[in-house]
Length: 250
Image 1 (cartoon, rainbow, N blue to C red):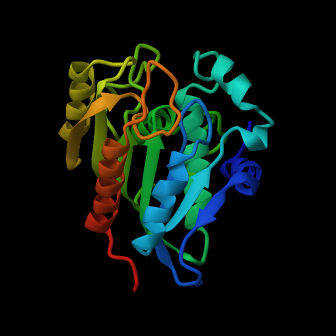
Image 2: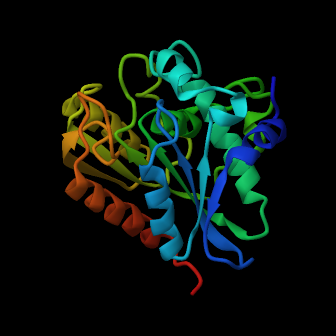
C-alpha cells in the first residue's frame, strides 16, 4: 500500500504545472479530472488561475498508472475500479506534494474536481483518514488546514457514492456546480448533498447551470453537450472563488 510520498512520486511526473514564471510562494489550485481522464477544458481553468496569479497543478490519475482513456471509460466510469474513496488517495497525495513546494503558499490551497474528481475530493474531506484507508498507508499525515477553497463541478454523487451524506471533517469555502440536465443525479439530490456540506459550517455556494453533465467540456459525448456560454461562466465563477479566498502576489 502506498504512502503519501510514494503516491506523489508516482503521480508527479504526470502533473502539468501552470503559473507565473517566478519562484515566489503563491496560492495554488490542484485540479482533478473526471472519470474519462484529462480533457481540453482543465487547461483553460489552469490558465485562468495563472492569470489571477495562482499556480495550477493538473493531476493525471491515469497516465502514471499506465491506463488509457479506453480502459478508464470501461473500468473507472463504470465503477469497477478507483472509486471515489481510492481517488481520494490521489487528492491527499497531491495536496501533500504540492504543499511542500517552495513556490507554493501551503496556507492558501484550493482543490478543484470535475465529476469523478469531485467525488474524490468529497471523500478526502469527509473521511476519518485512519491508517490504511483511502488506499494509503498514512492518509492522516497531510493536514487539510491549508485548503481554503473547494470547487466541485457536477461532482459524482450517485448511488455508488455511498458516503455522499457523510459530514466533512474540514469545511472550506465551496462552490458546487449543479447541472440542470445531469443524467447522473437530480438537482434535488445534489442540493441535499451540498446542504449537508453547508451544515458542517462551510460557506457553500451552489450554482445551477442550465446544461448537461460536462457542459464545459468541448466534444463531450451524448447525452452530454458542450455549452460555450455556460463554460465561460463556469471559468468566471472558478476564478472568483480563488480570488475570494486568497489574493495572489502581483
